[in-house]
Each structure stands twice: as C-alpha cells, then as structure tokens.
Image (cartoon, rainbow, N blue to C red):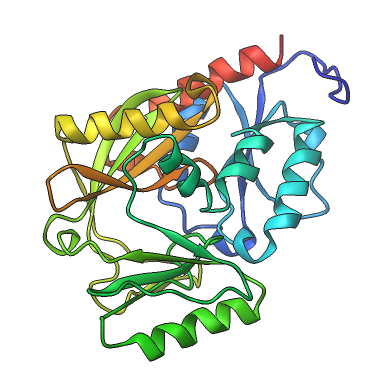
Length: 303
C-alpha cells in the first residue's frame, strides 16, 4: 500500500464515485453503475470533488465520473487529483488527468501518427489563423461537454475571431478545427473501453448542426443510439489508445470519439480519459463490465 494511505479495518471495499455539485442527478451512467457495484458488494458513496468536508481517506478507491465543472479550474482540479490519490487510489490516475484535461494532447497523438481532425492551438497573444475555406470549430483547449464551443461558416470570420478573442482575454488557449461535414449525416462514433478492452459503442448525433441545448450549464444535450463500429473505426480507436502515453490496461475506462473523414477513414476527435459519459445504458453488459473492472482495481490497490 503506498505511503499516505491508511490501513483499514476488515469490511466491504469502499468506493467513492466523484462528481460535481452541479452534476448531481444529471449523470445517466450513475444509476446503472451504482446498481452493478452494489451487486459486487461494494460500499458505495457519491462525493463532490471540491467539497472540503469529504474525507477521501475513508475510501479505498475514488473513481472520477461526472466532474464536469473542472474546465474553468483545471489547475485546482489537477492538484486535487494528486492530493486524493495520496490517500485513496484515484482512477483514472492523476497523471492521466493532467495529460488528458488539455486538448493539446491531440497534437502529441498526431505526432505519433494518429489520424486526428486537423487541429491548431493558439495561446493568448498568438495571431489567430482561421482555415482558408469551409466551416470550422473554435473551442478552448480545456473544456468538457462542448462548453464554449461553436461552429462557424466560412463567412463568419469576424464572429469567430471575436469568440477566440474572448477566450484569449480569459487567459485560455484556443483550439481550431475544420468542421467535418459528414458528421451531419453520419454522426460521431464513440467507442468505450474498459480496462483497455473494447466494451461497446454508440452513435452521437451532431451537436453543432444547430444551436446546442445545454443541460445544467455543464454539457450539450446529445442524441445517443447504439452503434456497431466498422472495422476501420475499431482500428482507428485501437491506434489512438496505443499512442496514449499510458499503459492502456491501467486505464479504468476510456472513450474514443471518431468523425468520418472525407476518404472514409475515421478521424480522432477526442480520447476521453478524465470524466467521460460512458453510455452504460445502451449495452446490457456495460455497467457490469465496468463494475467488475472496478472490483479488480480494488483488489490491486488494497493488496
């Protein structure tokens, strides 16, 4: 047991599912995951990450689930993750949180040969370079749930530059990507992995085709349906996970979001390793699969 974590009296393993105050009741994954964990004999509680009254050492394992308010406080969130991991094992790990919570990681994956949606990052003070033609998307590099994200047509450059300027004025880096038009018809494919292995996939309807509806001020509402990924999508997701600078078997969960490229080959939009929705309700075995992975993780951290 790592230094800082206390030995404990015998009893059922204790897991904290970590959320945000504003997200309580909004996580569709929570009910089915909680039921599956209780069937595994887990002593379960839900904790708000920035609630100073929480005694994290009372848990054996803390599992990040719906901490969707962290983007405006990323530095504090990363520090919190490190502190919690010292007294109760955090999954995914703090190093994963630090790397994956800033979308600059996409450039690193591209350097490793992953086919991503073309992306450029502009820090405050940089001159903004917009795509020469076609629609495009502007978002902060630190965001969740499509917060502060907008699509612009080629002729809306003034509006787009104003958006980027507002983000820069807040001290935030800007990510610019071309809008992948085929998503309007095909949607996104989100592939969910548990313990490094493929679990299930869904289709996510196009969020930016119109003005997105926001839920609780935390994330854009999405149309979700089950989907069987194509072989090329499985291959693209596997390549993305293999390029992540962590042992994929050590990742409790991962979600790989793909868009359909013009040539038919999928392009990576994001690898979600911090607090992704996992769409557990859309596959009969998904919640039990994640609960089993959590119990295996518990066995490791408690040994």
